[in-house]
Length: 356
Image (cartoon, rainbow, N blue to C red; front, top):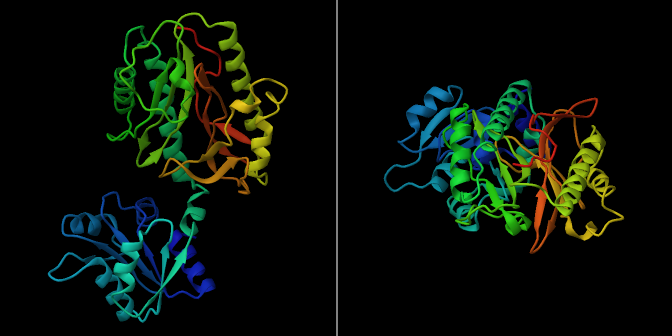
């Protein structure tokens, strides 16, 4: 069953006449369109692809099953176009993605006609959370590219090199290995800055004895990889070894707990086994994993309050960490497939502590 069919079943069950799709990843997932500035309007019988003249030709090639509609005409708006289509198709209700549309965008549609706007949350995202074989292939390729880039970048790390320079080289390696030409921004930080969960590369020079934390990934045919490895420049201290090995154990404990039917909270609790009797218990973070696909953070989530139930076909990260302000942090992150037997890690980079 394709996504359009699933969406129409949902619409019938919820008694809504049409669905306006605006989130870019959802537009791509449903239509396979690879461009920008586009929207879908779907009824029980028809599907419309709404865009402007820059993309109408591309849309006609990539989305042959859609009626392509150019909204950018004199005295017209997207909102007017959506309400006109609703009127022409007899749709009295329009479902929309509540978590994506701004209030002004919502108002620009609602105010232009009689069709009632009906908010929804995560309808298409739920479909996206279970990957088909084609998506799995793209995600495997993205993980392989990221893993090969890691093998290359660790040969480049030198004292005196800046975080920004290292991040630039890493992006270059991923493109050279076959990634899409728009690698997304990653986290590449060193020294005491490694305690920053989402730190961005800076002009800080790498020093002897630093942890270097690299959280990054790439796109392959639009699908993403996401991995983290933490290495030491020089010889690791005993504390660095202790923290690293605890973090590695946390990752491996979560991966061992993953199987269809378990919740995100149950997986999170598995991460605490290694540190529950240590001084590092309060230096972890409540969110330690997420689905990955066309967007880097997708359903399901692993965390202290996650009720998400894992399913066979989910592709998701496992990324517990230990973060000590003023000292540094460690994260060992994999991305893998939830199978009937458990968790298949798609990242080939070693879990062993690397001393450069």
